[in-house]
Length: 299
Image (cartoon, rainbow, N blue to C red; front, top):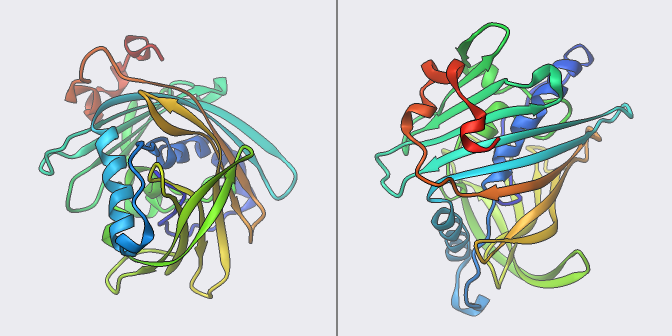
């Protein structure tokens, strides 16, 4: 995923803080899919804002087709001065056939008290995602209802719905090219298109306006800003380190901050790999989560 968000607000309370800290790592799925494909340079004069947005999404979808395994670390700093760290692995399966739903399984690795917890999301091409949470202590998977999908995590900028919903940003926003600007990542400057995203009339989103900076060379947004219904900047996200995967440029580290609440999240990609063979659909069956074997996928 690129640095842009489409979430529903959840109220963060002090009493929920401990639960949220354990759950925050799920937010990484929203960006775990954020990969970048090298492509030829096409200049702004040749493209509209919507065409640039389409190229960004199209390249992301192309490289994410099939099965992928990722291990990531999430470092959270909260407005009260406390912090937390989690490590998890994600298994995803995406088909080029629109009739086949996207699937994502998130396995908690650290800290020890939540190890073995599994989050599962299945998203059809049309319609709402279905999501489940498996807790080892209970030995069964619970499907999350719509209200639970909206819950916020530990002062982060994400919700369960962010993780499990794979709706395209193209479905929710119209893009306008408003300029060109250089963005610096790890000391290197990248020329970018600057897009203003305006929510479509029927879009069910929390941010009516966003801005993204899309690299001209490898079609990803290196920076993003999300503005709330009052027109105030609420969320910022930026890529702070780039790497390579299968010859393609990918974000190795991203930083997100809720500038109103003061919470921040640093997302570090530890590993990306393809499995030896396509992951069977049975792995993503909620009835099979209790028997999921992480060692079968090197987790």
